[in-house]
Image 1 (cartoon, rainbow, N blue to C red):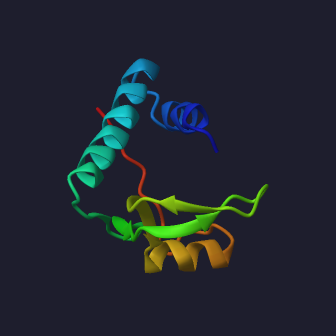
Image 2 (image 1 turned 135 degrees about the vertical axis):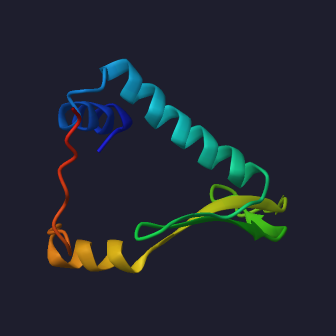
Length: 106
């Protein structure tokens, strides 16, 4: 699923919200997760999973074409660990563990 597909599905599931508002909401969530990771913080979404940053030490790599040794600098990489509920739901084939409540807006 792409970001635009996610926005389209959320907009369809929430007809009381405008499509552009859903786009702003999704963009804001992604921006906040990215900003937290850039600050070195951990982002945990209960039932979904946790995003962290892992450090990779500097090392000596190889140029695959020439076989020449190449220094590779230390770097930080984002890492995602799925939560228990997400893993169980994926293994069940997507069926929710508990009924999803419909939200009624008056």
